[in-house]
Length: 242
Image (cartoon, rainbow, N blue to C red; front, side):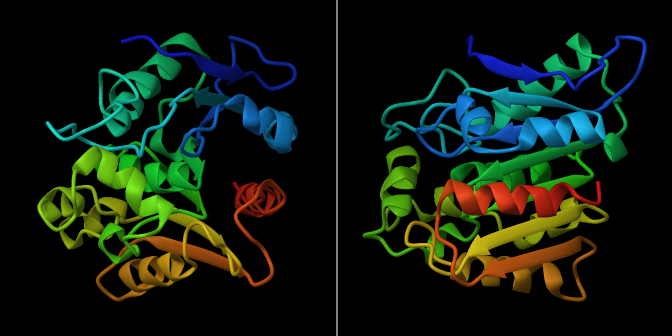
């Protein structure tokens, strides 16, 4: 399988140095160019010495498996596996980036926010996970919501195949420990009509208890929606101390 990857090298980039790596995941049906057009991510990369790797993922939900009922696969390999097994090794091999977990982060918005969590749970190579307006608890999504429908297109009907939805859920108890020591930075808009703000509350309960070893920072912006102005602000907040 081949897919495009947009790469941004910080100002003054030198192959003799080692930079921190940030993989950024776009939302369902979006493109990596959207980051360039709508955010200040490149400015943060210049200021903080980050190599940005932005894969083109089409209409993926950052799934870990495909099924006979899967309609419209984004590519030959499930999205989460593509990031963890292809994009991350590619970035480390081709560019002057540190291979240390402490210098590696993953960011996503909307479905990409979910993807950042799913990937980090299964590939323990990231010290910071930034998820903006993400979907975490799949089984709690209203069936009529578009976000639920795009997952049904991969996993099949929820009633018939609930175990598949649970497999890729972001709040699986058996994967809680996978985020121990990881800095989780989550943000959501209080007026989000695409992904309910209650998804943030679920993740706060999941990672905020005594059984969790994750380092959790969250922000609910009451008047924000599911849009670029909010995501741009949230990215600045999420990256300011990294």
